[in-house]
Length: 453
Image (cartoon, rainbow, N blue to C red; front, side, top):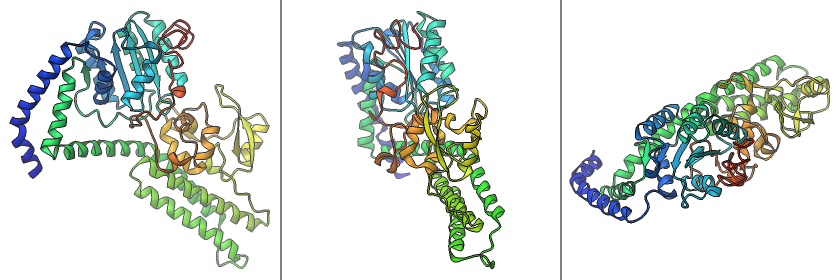
């Protein structure tokens, strides 16, 4: 309460300061062109839609408010910029530069004059999806940037992964006039003078992130709970008696490791607060299944299993026994994946493997086509080193492409949709427009996008 009272006592003084600053900045803005890429980026960090003042004839304030409301209600990291076709927005690098300056993973839709293009971080939407959607709206509404923007957003919202950024806490639409900079300066003074303002903003952002983490964890929970239950059933099925006449110390050690892994997985899931916590659960289950496979081999008198990754198609199948070539449905390059004996036999017979299905907005899909929400779950089973290679070209693979099992992922860096990554993204993976952008050969020019306009 003491912090709040101090802030309230400063309101009259700060109001005067804000007014003076806004007047000074607005006056200075009148001497130069309004808007600019920095202004657009600053506005998009605070809300999903930015309309340059010189492009208000494209998207009115009311239309922009409505569009922003739909995006915020959907809680998806979809950014929209409506810009004039001027030299300060170079077409060839516009999408890349805007994404870099905003610094948040997401889907970026940009109208430049009467043209349109879009890009996305692969953790949020695959390159093919972005290019298909952008190409479709360009072909259905050529020369109508408002229709292309709204049509793209309507299609992108149900397909985008991730969550709205925590920084979207207030106004949802930015209309650059220069005054927005004054407000930012005044807010900065509020933090400096009021002292407790930063604490209040930080707490709000923290609460929002915690809510988003809970929602993403709830999406994963059914799959993880199924894994834990399945492993418990395997423990019961094997029917091992540590005190039995045929039991030896090696068997008892394997059985103890399997039981410990089961308890670790259950405890870790009970304590999980964020999606990243699931990695510990699936890692424990992977350890437990190998211990159980070793125990079963000892009981049967067969050769002990080699320490290998779990079956790619469904980790519940247990440790893999060999690597086989596999090409995802719908195309993509052939890659080598570790598989169990049953799936190896099915592939050899020309049958589909017994893939792990999970619920998605499009119905049940193999987990590698369910999107980045399942990245922590999969990484606990397979580690960071092999996943990007075997999942390249899939929705899940896109979210792992920047990590490759090296130190960044080991240190817990897990940029999902709506997370702040700064300039840490690969323009080559940012779907749509790059390699030419709005210019010739890119997303906006003739021959760009998905088969041109």
